[in-house]
Image (cartoon, rainbow, N blue to C red):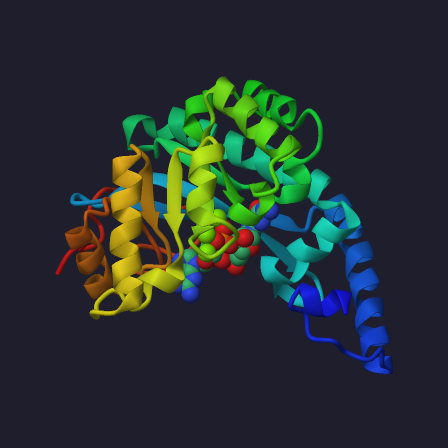
Length: 280
Ligand code: C2E
Ligand code: MG
Ligand code: MG
Ligand code: MG
């Protein structure tokens, strides 16, 4: 009954599920080893500013180079790390790596460096006391100004309020930007904008996929842009894969776009402006 309430399908406990639980524990232990052996990498995906196509920001995304499994997707191991608590150590390593990376680009590239780096932060990290102090230490050690960092949090991570929202206020006070990730797909999207400090709305790919056609996703992408503009927030459209989608989003008012059309996440993005034909 409890499972039904949360919308989870009710399943009987079977040997297959036992095996999956075992796999979960194994993967958890391997994450510990991977941290010790340095098997994680951070890659960076451009967030492009229209109309010129300058790389205004990058999003840091973690990768696991597993010696046997190959490149493991964060979708496979982040939930495990969240459950066993290793996300705290892994997340701090990602944060520090990202801050040092942008600090290095700033000193190597000067004005061609992106203005900001965006780092995904999970609910479990945000809910820890002193999370903002961890961020402040990462900024101080790297020499990166707080205004050059954004943290990406999901609606689900903050909708219950509590320490997570306290942490966002503390981060804001440091000068760090707050982005709501996958916006429009979680809990209480619009309500959160009244209660949570936010600077950036990352409009979910699900609204971008069909933005070239008249239909519900386009109406929602339009409405979300209007809400962000009205509230003085920056809207970023996620998962832009084609020039046609980029054009449609530009017509709706979007100035910041991210997606395979502009560049995949890589170790060393190309920051030369207008290497990509932004609009057809
Ligand atoms: P996200 O934060 O929403 O990141 C965007 C995801 O969409 C990334 O997948 C990115 O590679 C992918 N993507 C970007 N453009 C396109 C596109 O045009 N088409 C398609 N199909 N996909 C696109 P990735 O790197 O596999 O990460 C998946 C999710 O894992 C992230 O979603 C985020 O929730 C989580 N994640 C990744 N790195 C971290 C991290 O360092 N810390 C935490 N806590 N979570 C992370
Ligand atoms: Mg993100
Ligand atoms: Mg996202
Ligand atoms: Mg997304």
